[in-house]
Image 1 (cartoon, rainbow, N blue to C red):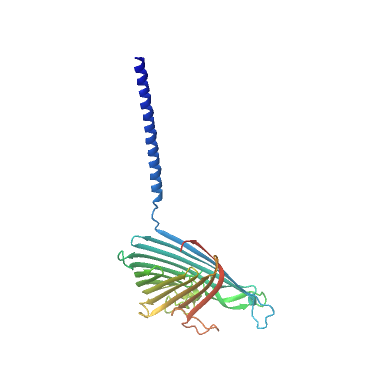
Image 2: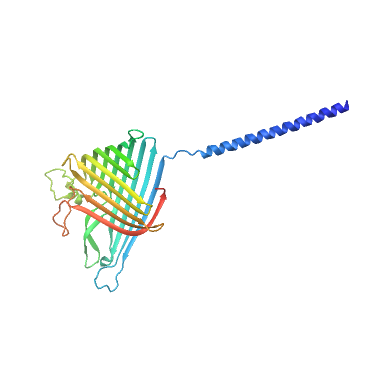
Length: 338
């Protein structure tokens, strides 16, 4: 009997040991499966609908003369710019936003105590588009453009003989002029580096906050009987209804040489329809000579028939083509991925 009891006890201990091993094994397998499931879930990334990046540029040029027989003046220029982009893509919808801010100064030895502004631009663009079909390059689009500058601009400077201070003739200022357009139409995006947007229904406002400049920027008189020589008699905004064509092209070679151009054409249905009344054409050439060093050459061309520009003597205001170019050697830095 004693032997039977010992045998039964041994068998119970054996089964208990085997049971504990099975529990331990099952627990280990469950823990491993849970950990693996966590890794699998972590590996599945959520879709990213937004892509953002910003390019910061700081350019500087300097000229110094010493006993230079041909003459000239010591000069220095400084330019800073930010080009920020935020683009959204989901299914057939896209929403592209771009903010460009550019500002630059000029110092010349012939006006030692005067720092002049030489470049100034504030531009915001936003376009929402929806593809006509999944495999199509055509999209229904709504396009918004805002264009102005940050501060006042002067020319025809004169120096006070007593104080030595310089005064100039005011030419433009913040929202003087300012342009705001909103258009509905179609966009064609055949490649990431090229886009064409045609808005046959575009409403545009031209703003001028500075009264004495309103006549020169095409503002209309509040009443025909008022004195046209008084700036406050002109309205501070002009509405135009027409069509707009916007073309963007960006090209690069090995991220060393880059070229970007934007052409904006606007025609006013209410005044000279079917004729391009306003032209804005911007070009940017860049040469990356190091990780953070860049050579840049920018040009801006504007033609607006409602803007009257005087000659060098400050007389005979008339319609003229406006052109500006800027060359700089500077520092560039990009946040995000282009």
